[in-house]
Amino acid sequence: MIAIVRVRGIHNLKPKVRKTLELLRLHKPNHAVVVPDTPAYRGMLKIVKDYVTYGEVSDETLLKLIEKRGEKGSKKVSNPKEVLERMKKGEKYDDLMDPVFRLHPPRKGWKSIKRLYPYGALGPRDNMDDLLKRMM
Image 1 (tube, rainbow, N blue to C red):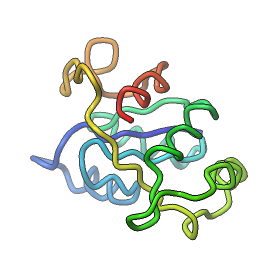
Image 2: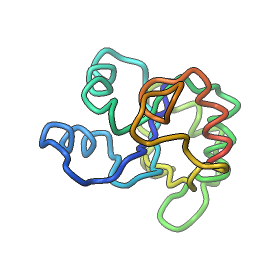
Image 3: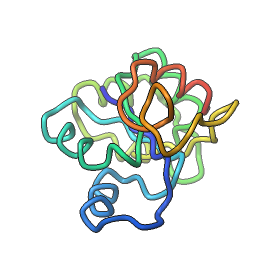
């Protein structure tokens, strides 16, 4: 599973990038989605790599994310383990949880929202679990 977090806002977006962010359901900064690792999603990530950060996420962090930030309307998710199992199988889970996580900005902030990962916040990263824990 890949977690994708939107970092940058809406100013001066190209139409192709704007549409791809809409398809990923990333409408605002600090919103996150979890998607399966497929070639289709990898192609979408190449298009929006200058506006999001993404990486592999562990099951433990994903379960913690669902427990803490998973919502259905204005209520917390009642059964996070069932949601996690459905996510891993690739089944729909919209009846249990909204597909978007609304996160806080990361503690200690972003390095830079204009540069790629080792020097900034954008693009692929290998420590996505650390970032998500800072944003919960």
